[in-house]
Image (cartoon, rainbow, N blue to C red; front, side, top):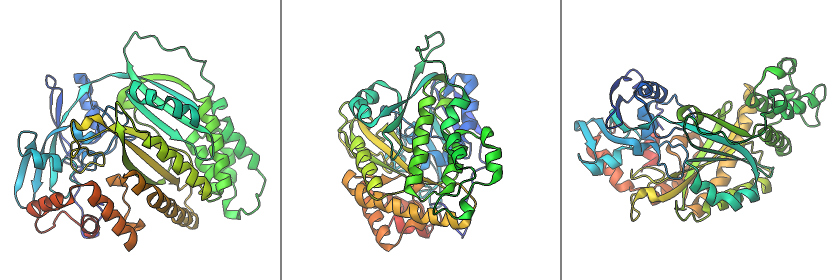
Length: 452
């Protein structure tokens, strides 16, 4: 949303850690400070951030302004960590906002998309630094359905990775671990060679073979086979998908190999929360992530699992070459008006409400421009399938950072505008934009269209 050929503003050099208040467990930073930089500054004080997204290279301004999130049914999106902020506006100068200073604008500006002003400083509520015990296991879809409520309510962090065209779901849980706690009994971890064998064997099975219907530029280059033993699991997956990324039967075989890989990676590990909550997203990829309500933390309504069942069935019916994983995470609600998980209009505490976040992907595993263009075209069809068949049914909206201008024709733009107006207080948000930025200095053509 921020891209503009007319000019962009970067806060990358506005990156100071201004202060750490150990007693209040708060940190004040400039908006260009990176998440990892803030974490390292907090570490000597025995503090950390409450939650993390998959990567830690975002600036704190971007991290909060688009309503990023981590995982955990009782943990809100990261914008809820913001307790005060300085917002530099074109019309009214520098505003200091908090729960006590203009609380209505504060709750609007915490997820302000950069449209209300330039975030200069943020004060965030931290938590004591802590270790987590992370458990990774593979379950069947039926086992997930049977144990889902218990998994949601009994684990601080929870993430599912659904593997299309398989009956496997990777379930990752994380809970507090204190030094001296006994590690759960688990089998001796498999060697890396044993873990990666499913991917390697699939690659080796193709060596010297030309599969019917595969063009010469999709064949395995000799250097790939020479380097197989040095590749990680995600690298092996990329090379396998590159062979025929749009053949749903081939993608299914790769997904099946990935399911076996995860089974061989089952087990426990412990570490600091900032380390364990980040994870390898794989190579270059197209992503669409959306968020939708699914009851309350105490009484989940099952919409999250029904959504996944519908999605997986539609993928298979459409023969969509959907690679693994489809990631599903949860947060509780946010009081920020423009958060995808906003529960500001609901009765009671926003953090009583439960939201699910689901991300679909297609990898771009090679530099072959023809192949990348074909994958991009197919991904747009994948996105259209989700939006047409699922978004209205489940009251889903896109993650702000995952809205792609190139995906929208006039019909899709109107549907997006309708979704946004149904979910957000758009009239109030646009009124605030007009008041703080009357000449639209902080906007661009795409933002104006989307927020119209």
